Image 1 (cartoon, rainbow, N blue to C red):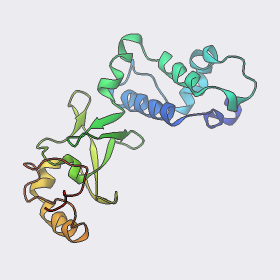
Image 2: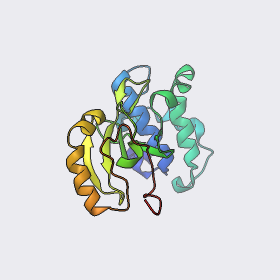
Image 3: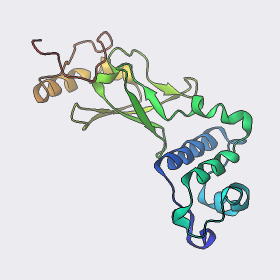
Amino acid sequence: AVRVHGLGILPWSKEVTQLRRRLHWLHRGLGEPWPNMSDEFLIDHLEDWLLPFLTGEADLKRIDPAALRDGLLSLVPHDLQRKLDALAPTHYAAPSGSNAPIDYEGEKPTLSIRVQELFGLSQHPSIASGTVPLALELLSPAHRPIQLTSDLPGFWRGSWADVRADMRGRYPKHVWPDDPMAAQATNRAKPRGK
């Protein structure tokens, strides 16, 4: 049925879909031995990654998504499984204390985060031991996109002044510092009385 109708008929959970995207990104960037995660490859190798983890369930919808996760991980050499989270983490630990999810769906790993949560950073956020900069989608306090950048320090020194002026008018209850690299990251509005 999977060969005829495609991988879409399997019960992919959000977690397993993200794992597949992370592995796809690693294969695309680093190549072998990171496994190919294309539909074609996975369909051609169903016996290697899916079949051993099925428990004889007759209804595809009743397959446990953990079987898909375990199957995908079985394609990753054991020594590389330990490196997966270090090279392609699921979340970014922001200076504000938040853990923001990293999206691996597009061409570049992307972090969508409120701009105030990155105050105090003078280096651009990256993954893969600091070798791959994240594409940043900087958001307003209302989680609306305000800027896309691959150079956070350049943004602070450049167009931040214009963004700051606009944001101060729209969100007066939030802190909009002149020098965001020297400011403290926050995920809250200004304390009362300030």
